Image 1 (cartoon, rainbow, N blue to C red):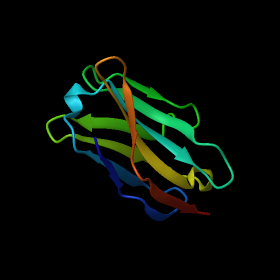
Image 2: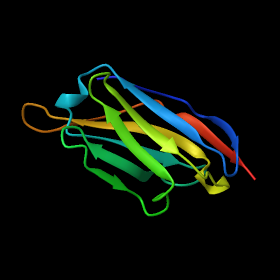
Image 3: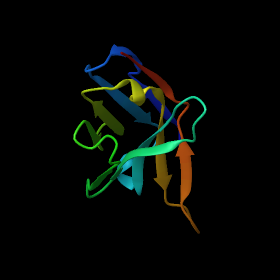
Amino acid sequence: VQLVESGGGLVQAGGSLRLSCATSGSTVSFITMGWYRQAPGKQREFVADIKSLSGTTNIADSVKGRFTISRDNAKNMMYLQMNSLKPEDTAVYYCKANVPGLAYAHTYWGQGTQVTVSS
């Protein structure tokens, strides 16, 4: 499974961006998909995830009310709508997928897309 993120860039505080994650597999067969981010000098942190079949979402408190995660199983895509962006949202954003295997689930990561929020 390959994951490719896009949609990052430079935006002013208060602005919006929409990240996309394109997958080479069928997202309807995935367990969950999610977004993580890593700021310079910090550990990678959870942002949001979504169960592929039910669409149930889980959002980190730091972005709740500003970010929305969604997926389109027909297009094998996942999205992260980011509104009211803050400078502290600056990070590389990664797409992650948990895919069932024969004995256990496999985890796949994308290469990341840079989001920079200027004050």
